[in-house]
Image (cartoon, rainbow, N blue to C red):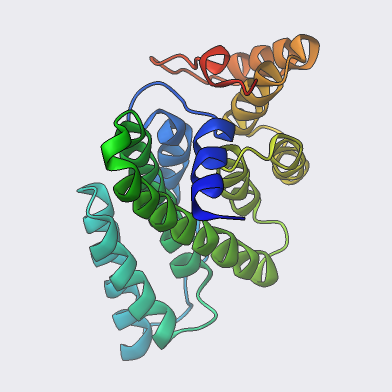
Length: 229
């Protein structure tokens, strides 16, 4: 596929949530719980090496909270280099990569409105693709370390949304819910995908279930504006 075709397909097929970080609203809520409430597995013991790994992850988290994606990714990568079996480091890096990929995507979409900026937009698409690919790779590693870690499927579902893989996104959110039946954000995202593809029955069921589980979102999706012709 040519770069131009790839760019056009990426823009047309991707599902965009209103608001700059709207698609991450559920993700970041879960992420905060994982950081501060110990949801992620952490190395046992208090050896100097393990303490250093936790310090690197904590530094990455601080950058992430400041939306400094590259700095966060660098810290998580250092932690992974020191501890290749750190589920926590892989998962947090996946979160940062997803956030940065979304930022590149938004830039590409804005530039696409100006034909003179087409080449620059393609560059942003390529950067987004690279980050989304890293998300999937990190999530697969997380699954190797813990097959029941629901959030890894959730992140991959978000990537599938951006890449226009509706059926795959539904499959991934379903896998997430199989691991964690009360995951409100997964119901919300799957419901939004169902809405996008015109499955109003399942969309209504999922969005209702998300609300029952306490999901709230001040932004609303606008799938009709992004449907492919």
